[in-house]
Image (cartoon, rainbow, N blue to C red; front, side, top):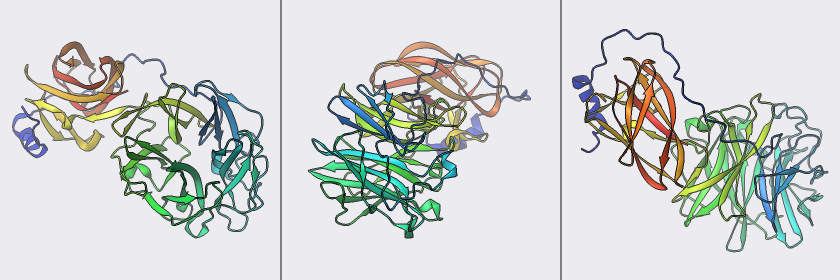
Length: 457
């Protein structure tokens, strides 16, 4: 039977769905076997806002200032095992920049030298774009420097490449090339001054040292999970679609996220995804505040996404490197949960209702009370294998379960402790899925429980 439309389902709830008339005991937190950490840093020290460039067989990663260096630098041949180099590839800033300016939110020793971008302009020509504090305006601006080797030393230019104090300054330069043309993406730092933040695009000269033509604003902050800002643009093209990765919200805690938007044309319009790509919750708390991302193709020809996340004590931002798969032009990050709402599933002899208690999207599916009741989710995964199924539920009856069927095969149960109604909790177990589309079906088991959503990781 087709999924019941929400309005009809809510009306049906008043007629056919009844919560068992009993007093709910104090809510308890469900327990489940905790899997070992699936996501670990590849550079387990301060290495924020990573940018990665490949030269020959070696990958070079550059990061925001730390440990007395304006720019941190590391090398790898596989994007997994990294060696952090002692040298500072940018030992001196441009004459326009203040090397002693302090940025307390960035942590001890942060002098506002942020988010480098390095690219080759020839066999022995390299350019670095970097953010630093402009002496004249008192705002952050983007500078350029050149070198003849990936590790520098880079020689800075005397004037900034982008400096727009009237709109808060300029930070987070990123490079994109197409049809022999190079483009600069950056953010106006409006959140410093109660202004909007826009990610912008403009063509630059072949050597990357001069802006040419008109700039185009692409996206600004306008979703609740973005807070007051968007930043850290990375542009990638997949199947003829432009995918604009970006970070959003406050960088200094677990609320930092990475999102993406897509467009058919380079200059847009870009349409944002409804949900962020990477968040603390999507990584089950294993990565805190994921952001500052870059995308690179690995030696195996597969894409990877590198990004930073806070350590458990929020004292430094380590670098992570995860496989990046695709569902068409939609990016899928290995280890990041993908949510499927219960009200969007196909359900038979069950009904949707509005819910409280922090229900995802504010709607859940209940009335899973009959032998022929089914709630079937259609999920897509990039590769065959074992995945973690996370079920958001509430159970106000007694400890119980739902039967589980995966791709038509009975697969045991999903077990629920007693939580109380509208107290949405998560229980997790492993499932085996095939590459591409899959069905995950819940049926009536012991006692009663409602479904809010499932996550796949």
